[in-house]
Length: 191
Image (cartoon, rainbow, N blue to C red):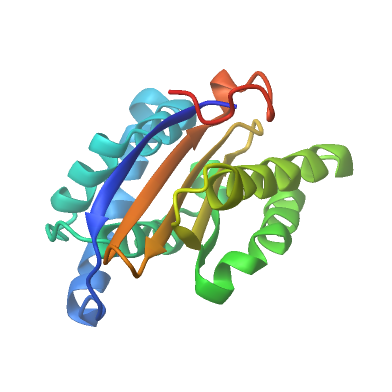
């Protein structure tokens, strides 16, 4: 498997104000629509799997805090902004309990995209394995609390997930991309 990178961020509590998130969602929908029209869904998920591009995208959307909130807010905004029927890409999962619904989200999206059950099962497997590697195999002490799985209509995927360390008062965001996946077990966290 190929992790494209990670970001180390300070922990901050609270939430983005609703007046800001509604504007961010509108702007994100327009940006991703243009990106997909110009470059396709592959380029969109490739960009979102780049930690530096992801952070810059959060700033462009007006969430310019350098904190753990960038991950949760930007993926939450994208989940509402991306329309599978229009964009050919969907975001599954999210923060906290919502992250545990990722397999059922993948089932729903797989149905919309017309995937066979084997393909849906493979995507769910990829989602679980990326979480398992970052949560357990790396053993960095960052317990995952956020898992966002992006999937395109041609079954390519990217993962943006985040773990938290209360001891260090920091978060670590992990990025994965399917296009370079060779194995889930051989050097899974090599950059």
